[in-house]
Image (cartoon, helix red, strand yellow):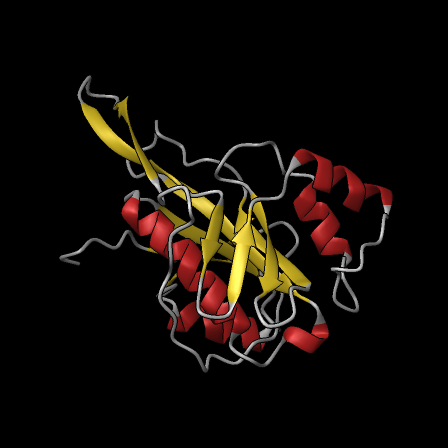
Length: 201
């Protein structure tokens, strides 16, 4: 999903939803101890956006090609429909990108599933994509900052795949801390990694 063409010109603070924000649940790690895993809130809010999780019903609408007045021109793109296919009702899923100023859905963003808790360092993949009219306004950077804040709270490492010729998205990833080039996908995309961030790191 990392295919948008934004310009990083905004800094925003992630807000919490009306239900009280993220929820901490305790699970067991491989050593038999426990560690806190943060479940992302159903709707993230930033200065200019809301990012609600895509519900199974909304995913079905997108797959069936049902248009809604709340869709910005060009939405959904094929990548948005692909993202909707990952909706499962779990909190680590895809989200709609909704502009606060007009209430229009202008893209999708989110994680490709929950972090692997069996790995030495839990990791998730993140992706995002916007309709053309929403690009170049710092929206992708704002979206990514909100998602990364959740991953940081859960002490989860994040990776993203991006086409090597997508200079704008590569700039967004670099400015967001994706500094490690791990590999390439079979499709030729670069796999970039952002290390776990903590309050001291």
